[in-house]
Image 1 (tube, rainbow, N blue to C red):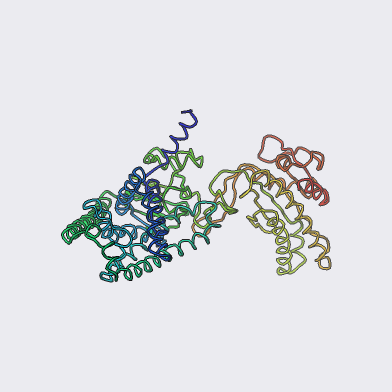
Image 2: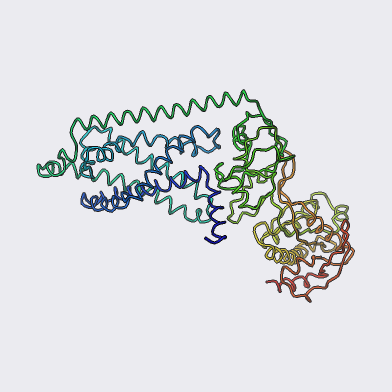
Length: 573
């Protein structure tokens, strides 16, 4: 085995936790359920079609390696379901998570009578119950058995579909595939139940002939009353044992809650000023959910994503060691800082202060979300634009007139930014900060910012022409563009949080915008952005400028007239 393959295998195994094991087992069981439902749907054709489909179904699922894997998945998935009942302290605001757990725990109660009559009867007494025998026993007996089986089918299918939804909703293709998956989720069980009904009616109709009854309802196939009583006793014993196991899990939850309350409380301090006290043992995400504190979590606390990440303030050395699954997820997103943890996995034993790296209303979905990557240090291009002469404009006009003109100016600027893939970020008086690269690579961000500057010049020229009768002189402006590593996040207090970017690159862009006054130009672009955009070296003139707060001079490109910038932008396109 090569070192690369060995490393990949170790990395993959390290990322498998209890939730991943439960998912794998669930996929095996859902595959069996899908095969069984499609077999049921053949009942809409005939009993012969049911028998034909069953032959293939049995040949695959009773193949020894597959059968071992299947029954191991049954036991593992069921055991992990009971463990989840004990282990899960808090659910999110969605009703789907508790519904999925309740449905999953109810499946053994609903389905075991069927398993005892078919599989256990075959194992202990050699019964050969196939579709004719099973359908006849259901539709010729008490009606509650039909309703019980129908409920078991729908419960199992709904539980599996919810699990698939929680797993697939993080996949890039899921949004496009949702209509098709929803259609399958509705049509397959509908056809299966219809086939169950039609097959049962056909079996009852066929049972009116003595020949059919002798061929399909013999003692070898249906068993004796004594064998039936024995199977029913086994079933009742299983149900009592299973319900007792659920009772033990619930009692253990209560005992744990009492122990945690006696063990003391911890204080959690959020970056928005919120402070809560919770018993020890809760994860940070569970504490947020219990106290109705918004906390991002795309996967619902299953450690399948990293959107619940927090950065701990203070010494992280006293925190519990990350589990293998948490360490795997953090490694996948490149978070090697020990102060960065997953809120769904971290269960603090002492008071904790932290800030959330992803705000709940800005959780990235990875499908074109302009704010993807919040809380990360990343390369962005900042564009500062400022309106010249607004002070003198205000001295000669009514306040409402000034506000109208400034709003028209900012609208023209914002339109140019948005049409080129940027994001208007902050409006300060008659100026604006726009960000590029929130959902694109650095090269594209640089090109977009320069094209936006050219479109700003065009839009302002059109605005000047529109307002020429009301303005003594055209609106002038200055633009500064610079790119670099910045921190994107929410800044503010409680309900007054503002999404923005912080870093030296933003400050430099602001300084460049100020320099357009002294250099007598409209646009100044740092040479790094200019080069990344792929513009020819001789399109715009180059010079070095001193930036306040920086020891080294900065090489920049200047555009004195809008036509110069349009020419340079054309080279990018």
